[in-house]
Length: 203
Image (cartoon, rainbow, N blue to C red):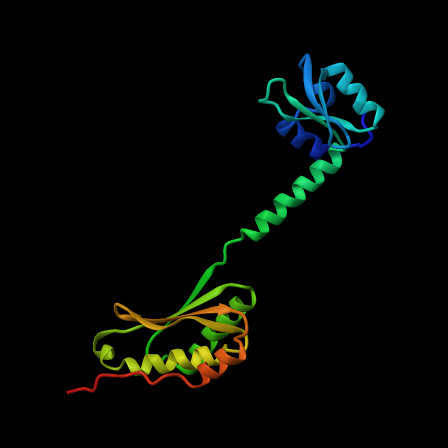
């Protein structure tokens, strides 16, 4: 009866979310016309006839109101735009995953190279990367070794990432967090000339 023909899948979705045309089983409705104007409270038969005359659908948009509010619209277009907005909202809410590569102080360069390539792939996919170096035993006496490793890794990925969390200690682990994106010129200059890190001398 309406001017639009809905695909089967959309008809199933609309049956769950909305009552449309003859599916609206009430005596009267508060009607919003095809131009968006408030027509007022009218018998359901009159509302259906207005929708037919406009070659559109009668859609119940507020079933909890007294009487229910219905609108004359192109229901197929309405469902399409609603689904499109939901997809865009879902895409915008996509959680950025934090990947992690784990190393030891002075990990073999070949093994570290594989780990760095993993980090590069993840960054290019839009993920953040947490690089951790775990200390064991007396390795804690030489934090500057791990710090240098983290700096080298960050520099090798500087073309596609920025440092979100500068190198820091968490228990027996030193870490740095990299985020996707190229640094600005100012940040890049700062990164190339890092502030000296004080390392306590051994007694």
